[in-house]
Image (cartoon, one colour):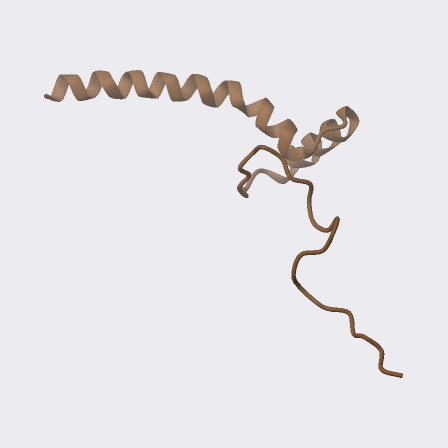
Length: 79
């Protein structure tokens, strides 16, 4: 009797991480911060990526807007 070998690779039903609407990338962060963030995220029922994204979003948005304004001022002065 010939047994069918399990295939390796390729898509599998239910395999891998759940999909989200985010476009995630890997970043390096201090290990202690990540450990604490992982704990908070777990208690709140979130993924670490969701928790850190929401935690950092306000700071990044504020700094981005400030930098764009300052950059626009700098550009206008040099022209």
